[in-house]
Image (cartoon, rainbow, N blue to C red; front, side):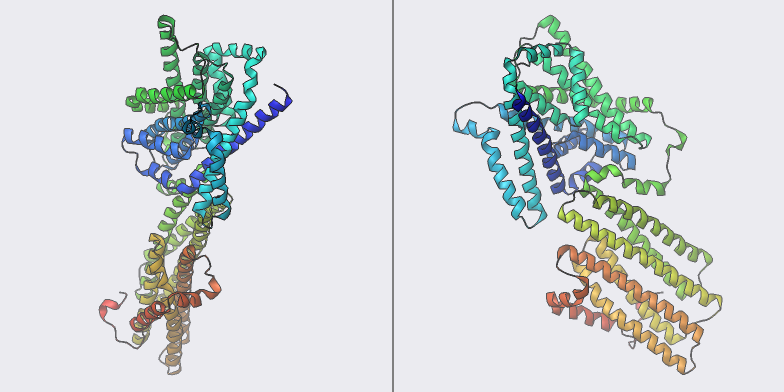
Amino acid sequence: MDIFGILTLVGGLALFLYGMSVMGGGLEKISGGRLELLLERLTSNSLFAVLLGAGVTAVIQSSSATTVMVVGFVNSGIMKLSQAIGIIMGANVGTTVTSWILSLTGVQGDNVFVRLLKPSSFSPVLALIGIILYMSGKNSKKKDVGEILLGFAVLMFGMESMSGAVKPLADVPEFTNLLTVFKNPLLGVVTGAVLTAVIQSSSASVGILQALSSTGAFTYASCIPIIMGQNIGTCVTAMLSSIGANKSARRTAFVHLYFNLIGAAVFMLFYFGLDMFIDFGFSNKTVGAAGIALIHSVFNIATTILLLPFIHGLEKLAYLTIPPSEDEKASEEDMQFKILDDRFLQTPGFAIEQCRSLAIQMASLAQECFLKAVRVVFHNDSKETVEEVIALENRIDVYEDKIGVYLTKLSSQNLAYQDSQNVSTLLHCITDIERISDHAVNIVESAREMHKRKMHFSKKAMEEITIYTNAVEDILERALGAFIVGDEEQAFTVEPLEEVIDVLNKNVKKRHVKRLRKGKCTIELGLILSDIATNYERVADHCSNIALYLIQEQDTELEAHNYVNRLREKDGMSFEHWREIFEEKYHLGKNRSADDKVL
C-alpha cells in the first residue's frame, strides 16, 4: 500500500465515523426524546426491557448512547438498577443491526436487484434525496430526515473507501504475517477492546473490522476474539460517564462491564474448548462482512439469553463491587433535580422533557403560592400561612435556578429547530412563573401590614377586590393550565382576560380615590390596596407572557409588540367574544353570587 492508499484509508475512516455520528444525531433529533421517555417508563418487565433496549438502540444506532442514558436514569433516581440491566442487555442486541447494514458492502452478483443492494448503488440516491430535504426543508423534521440520509450515505461511502483502500494489503506478506498475532485469542480480545475504547463505538469498530475483512486475510478463528474484545471495549463509554455519579449509576456501568466480560469468557471457552475436540470446519475459513455481522449477532443474542435469568445475580455482583453506604440516600428535594443529568444533554429531546416536567411542578407551586397569598388578604391568617408563602417562593427560586442553568447548557448543544424553540419557551416561562411567586410575596407583605395595623377594607372595597381576585385567579388557572398541558386554545383565552384585568385595575383604584375623597377610606389603607391591585395586574401580565410564548411555538411570526393585533387578525370574532364574556363576568357593578366569591 502506497501513501495514496493510506490517505484513502484514513479519509474513508474519517467519513465512516463522521457519517455514523451525523446519522445517529439525526435519528436522535427526529425521535424528539420519545424513545428515551419509553426507556424511562416501560421497564417493569425484564423481557420487555430487553426488547425495548434493543429497539431503541437499533433506531438511534448506538449502544453506548443507550447505556449512557440508562446510567443517567439510574443516577437521577428515575430508574432502578434491576430495570436498567434489561435495557443494557437489549442495547447489546440492538447494536448488531448496524453491522448487518454495513455487511451490504460485501454483496456480490451481476443481477440488477443484487447490484441495487450494494451501497455503491443506493448511497448516491440517498445522498441526493438527503441533500434536497436538508437544503429545501422548511420544517425541522424534513431537515432531520435529510440529515439521517446524508449521514447514512457518507457512512457507506466511507466504508466503501476503506474496503477499497485495504484490498491491496491481501498481497502484502508483512500484513498477512501481522495477522498471525490474532491467532492468540487473548491478544485478539485486547486489540478489539483497545480499538473500541479509543473510538468509543462498538458499531464503528465492527465496521472497521468488516472493511479490513475485504482483504481476505481474516478467518473466523481470528475474528471471534476481536469481536469479543470490541464488546468489552464499548463498556468504557459507560464507565467514563459514571465518573462523578452516585453509587447506583456506577453500579449500572459495572453491570454493563460484567455482562460483556462474562459473555466473552463463556463464549470463548465454549468455542475454543469445543474446537479442540470437534474441530469446527469453518474456523480457518476466510470471513467476510456478513460473517462478522453473524458472529456479532450470535454473541450478543446468546449472551443475553444466557444471562437474562441471572439479572438479580448481576445486580448482587454490582452491589458487591460497590457496597451501599448510609449516606447514599439523598433527600427527596435533592432527588427531584437529579433528573437534570448532564448525560441527557446528548439527547436534547429527552432533556427538554425532563426540564418541562420540573417546570410543570414549578408552575403548580407558583399557583399554590398565589392562592395562599390571596387567603391572607381576606383573612388574618396565622403566621404559618405567611411562612408557607415565603417558603414556596424560595423553593420556586431554586427551581428557576436549576432549570435555567440546565437549559442554558442545553442551548449550547446542536439542537433541532423545534428543540431550540422549546428551550427558548421554557426559559421565558420559568422566568415569568418565578415572578408570579415574587408578587405573591409582595401581596402577603401588604396584607400582613394591613392586619398588623388592624385596618380593614370597607364592604364595597372588599366586593371589588373579590371580583378582581377572581379574575386574576382565572387568568392564572388559564395560563398555567395551558402551560402544563400545552393547550394553545386555552392560551388564546388569556389575552382577552388580561385586557379586562387592566381595566379592572384602573377602575378599582379610581373607585378607591372616590371613597378617599368622601372620607370613607384612609390614605394608609389606600396605599395597601394600590400595592395589592398593582401586584394583581403584574401577575396578569406574566400570565399574558406565558400565553404568548406558548402561542409563538405554533406561530413563529407572532411577536410581542403586535401580539394583540395579530390575535385579533387571526380570529377577531373569537377574541372579542371572549373579552365580552370576561367583561360581563368581572364587571364591578354587577351583583355577584356567593359561589363567585373567592372565599
